Length: 116
Image (cartoon, rainbow, N blue to C red; front, side):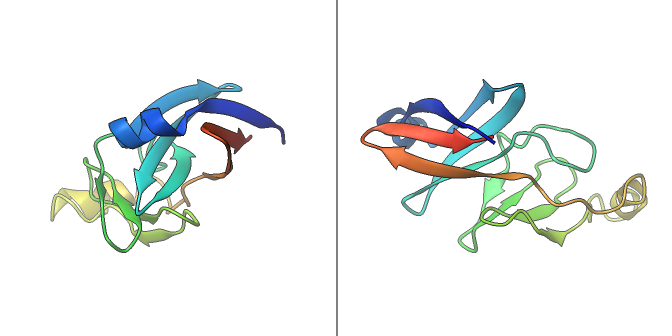
């Protein structure tokens, strides 16, 4: 793994979310509860984008498509494809639950660095 510069903290704070391609990985950066989170930008269920996913006070991101929920800090699955009510659980069987990839982040002055 290698540390890569991923942009400015000030910019992320203004935007609150930003997707960047770094070392061949699409990474979603999120500013939430005064912390930078870096996660894979697509839901591991059907590879749909998480950019507009709801962020909860429990540090979870909810996929806007099938409402799968993942812990922002560790990537663990909190709920797998519950929506829509009848179809969601069937779609959930298309692939078994997979954790969200979470990348290590550190700050140097105003720079965000991510370990990929």
